[in-house]
Length: 271
Image 1: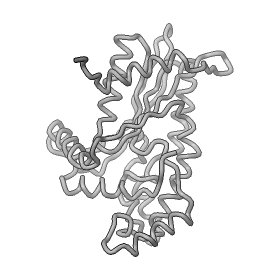
Image 2: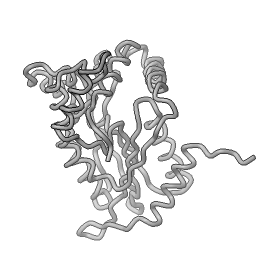
Image 3: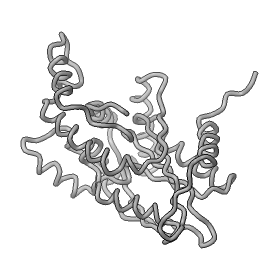
Image 4: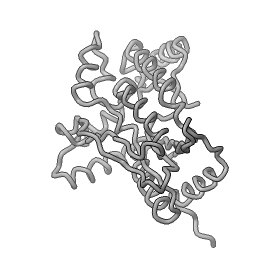
């Protein structure tokens, strides 16, 4: 009986095939632009681990210069997040803390992707570093890290991972109808725990991601769990592993559940 391939093996082979067939793009000076591969999947499914493992194999085994970037790296610093929270009047519970559309630094994201498109000219880029365990689990940007390309090499691939990559806002009228229908249900649903105005704000925020970030992705892969209930267990396990490494700093199990719950409120559909 043939051995089943792992997700890593499948993804590496997919990337190798895609790089062979993907049309080359160049800057005005003739330098090649790297291909941006997006990996989308729910919390805890292993996007970060898979990105890291695939990047390592591509670099060391296949000699394809690759770097990895996470949507989480593009979160606003804590002070910026606090400003978002303070500006919302009345208070939007979905914007209290990181996670949903409106909590990322889109100006920085545009700068990062513009710099990545020219990295084979400049040979160097500063990438933001975000520490989720900072400030007792609230998270904060801790600085920038330099990523370099040797003079005789070219960056060929950027692996960009995030839980909502490719998500698109819904028509506001459709969202209102969905909300009203949910309110008429005999029992509470996730969506009715928040006001329609809170949901509409997140929906509106998402349109900016669709406009300025998603077009930077050349190829998008979706990771789908066999059972949606795995997400809770995986994300709690992920948090506990991080806390075991940093001395116990991070979210409690209840805070993790609250965080995941808030992400389920995103009123969107993937295109």
